[in-house]
Length: 252
Image (cartoon, rainbow, N blue to C red; front, top):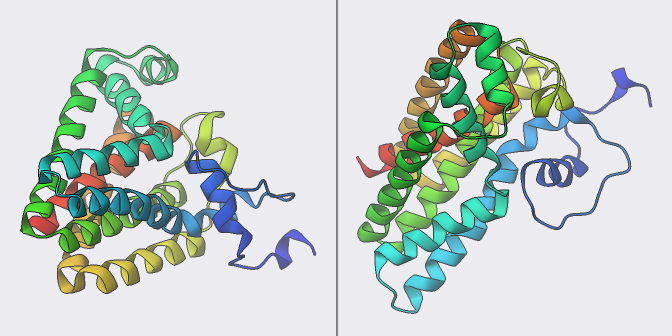
């Protein structure tokens, strides 16, 4: 099969993106489709979200306080992904506001050390996610589980949108490793998020999806102005901030 004959969707794509975006023990694929598999990013989010939802619901069933149930769910989200996206958020904030030129910002983002901006962003992001999930558990456990699933899927569906519409700011890193995402692949990812949002949260889920799009557009604009494109760190920041926006929207 030639590259042009590659199918738009392949079942193996889910295993590929789980291997890329999580620390879950999934079998390695003999042939990696890279950017063509990006449509499955929201499915990976569903898997990650399902694990976190089950952990939180288990705590709720055991009679744990809702604040602790939310904390357990949040810890699961972080551990399952190896803090991949949290790292991207910290690096992006450090670079965007710690450098005066594009070259310096990219250099800071590549640095493994974390700066003050990154620490503050991480603390605020974790606090916002914990508070939002906690409030959803206060509504009821079902709302919390649904919110985690919708936020996890939607936030990862926005990553291919960035990849398909912004050039890479540098070679190397996660974004370059995956390659250029075709627009149709990004649209399929968005479609998966659309269905997920409506199935699990109804019209409120679609409103949350709209907020996710708004946040993604803002991040894309900032990334374009600051570094002239996107990197793997920008994708991680997009996931984190869209997840927060979706969770907060579902509380409204």
